[in-house]
Length: 281
Image (cartoon, rainbow, N blue to C red; front, side, top):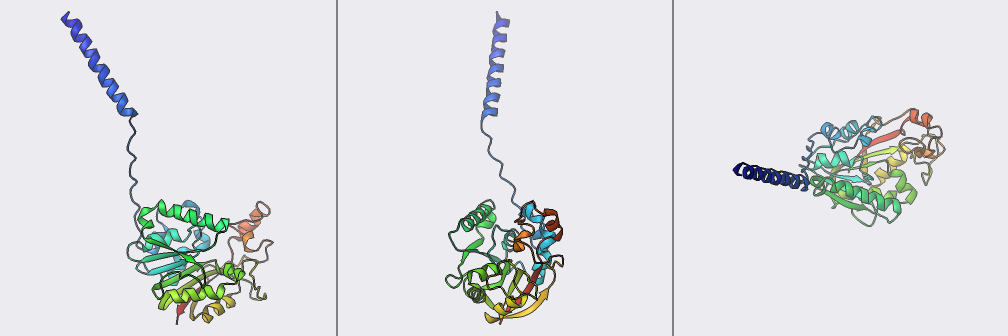
């Protein structure tokens, strides 16, 4: 009888242990906190950092971010305003680089159009996914002539990438350049990258094909109180004939014609671009 009793007791203990293990495995596990990404301290580190998506990295060969930002004179301790950061191609480089010692303003275009609203929502979602940056990035509004992009006279640098044609088409180019001038400190830098039109063509007052004459961009900046410091050909593309059926948007990454002649336009690559460095007088 004693043996039977002990056997039964052992069975009960085993059953309880098994039940405890089942309960333990069924209990929800606490989500592991992802390790914080390392904040970069140089332009090269920022371009190579984990904050960038694989899709954005694929464009580095066409956009030359290290060379472009080095040409502008970017430093991690600067206060920088990026104009119309869009979905954040350059934000993924600038925001982490400026997070510790500098300050970064993202001046998103104002407006209630579907595309603009979606763009701003996607940008906010990216910031929320990176809380260590969300608290550091200051999102302002680009509303030329109506709202400041940053407090007057506080920025060391204002940068804009492929946006001038939009201001021309909306008739706000003069107000836009004036807002950059107001935000910058005396001696502050304005860096401009824009699709470059054939210099032999006449000026299109609406920039309908997305290309802009280099001399017109220089004129706009000088009229707002800037002085041209230097030009760079780092973003030049001599393969771009600038006579495409859907303008600059025929080329990658947009491919507005879809699969039609896609290989041809892929071989051309992204647009020929001016890269200009101005100083606030």
